[in-house]
Amino acid sequence: MVNVWLNELWSWSAQRRQKKKRANSNELNINVMNQDILSSETEPLSKIDIGNVLMQALHFFFGFGCILGPLLAEPFLKHSYIGSEGFFANCLVLPYTIASSTAVISSITFFLLFVFYPYDQPKSNSSEIDSDEVQIISSNSDDVDSSRNSSSLYYLLIFSCSVFLFVFLGSEGTYFQFSASFATKTKLNLSEPNAAFLASSLAISFTAFRAFSVLIALKLTPDLMILLDLFSVVIGNTLVYFFADRNLVLFVIGIILLGAGFASVFPSFFPFLERNGFEVTDMIGSVLTFSGGLAEVLAPFIIGLYIDNKPYVLVYFTFASVTLSFIVLALLNILIWKYFRSPGSAALFRGFNGQSS
Image 1 (cartoon, rainbow, N blue to C red):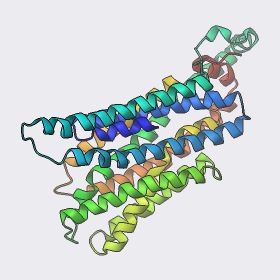
Image 2 (image 1 turned 180 degrees about the vertical axis):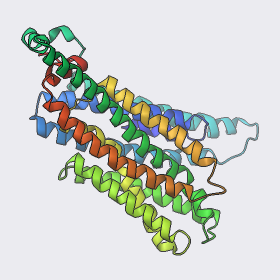
Image 3 (image 1 turned 45 degrees about the vertical axis):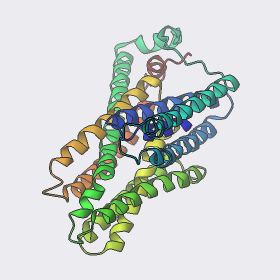
């Protein structure tokens, strides 16, 4: 968790977006490992609930690091270049030393976790599927068709999950990048410092509600948390739409609700899949993380082309994204229900995910 501090200590460089995508991938890999460790010690339902709490906590510390990192580096980055040894010591050596120290602490922490909870990554071995199940699946043409249908449902599930993360994280990324720019273009005529304060409200709300989500995860299922987040985004974006030009207080409340809605969808999504019986392996997790990362690159680029002349494109895009998110989420529940009722799904599921019989 400490490792996420490193990302924002380097946020002054052009590599910030690349490092953020790498951090998201690390979080996902840690979640997959946590789920496997817990599976041998807890009942399935308890395991999934604990996994949700762990993911919420992991993402809270990521957000906490995003705030703390620049605060640690800022005192050493104030001075302009003066060609002295003091410049290199204060503006280069010390910030990079802090960054490398957090990386070392993170590595040691992760090593100790591995020592106390040894982890052997499951390896795919389709030959381990029960011969009886293979015979049942291939015994006649109807069963073969069922197997093919299950395979199609499986890949459609992965595609739908990718679309959900692509759409939602694209909206999240655009709001974080352009909320300040949008605020300066409303009829309230906010100054740049006030617009920056508004953007900070979004980030603070985002991080605070990630901490709150750790407690919520103890009581609510990931499914319900995702729905509440989506409704929060709808309400917040609606307030921004109606009051960004008229009422500063309601405008800020809308931004805060948006931060709350964006906070726990990503960390809740993977426990949501596992809770419904769909195992998130490293391969599947990589596909989903790539989809989300791609959206955080493409969506801001596209919105950035229009934000100056048509600032409300940010609001319209968010409405479209959250509407599509609701539709895809409903489709996901239907696909999961159909997939696990399919006759050939059990053997296929083990074959694709590397489980033994």
